[in-house]
Amino acid sequence: VMAMLFCAYIAFAILCVLNIVTGVFVDQANSILRADADNMVMEEMNQMHRRMDEMKTIFTNAVDSDTGELDEKQFFEFSQNPVVQAYFRKIGLNVERGNASVLFRLIDIESDGRVGLEEFVQGCLQFVG
Image (cartoon, rainbow, N blue to C red; front, side, top):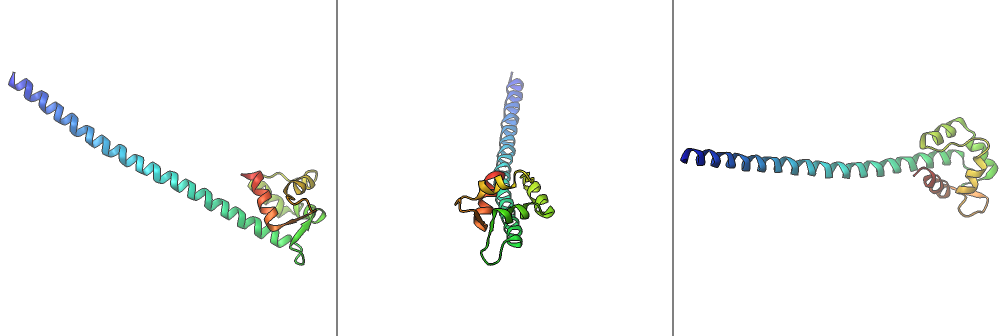
């Protein structure tokens, strides 16, 4: 009888120790998961900042240096540049000859017929996420 109780005691003690060890592993996994989620958010924010910097560079290279803006005709010519086309495809915008003026009107937030740097960046970000 005493041997049976001693075996039950040992089994219960081992079960308790295993439960504690499992709890430590689960807690560690949860902390890694939280850190991973934070890293994913930071990576997404960094990617958005890189995308904005790329948009600013592309726009700045095409913009009229006097006004710092593009009108619809200049935007159409700008959007037909193969480098700009490749960049638009990279960020998920499909800008063809037929829809370049539609995109211009959509990103022309002030509806003044001209698109500045901030309008261009904010307008494009609305369509790519």
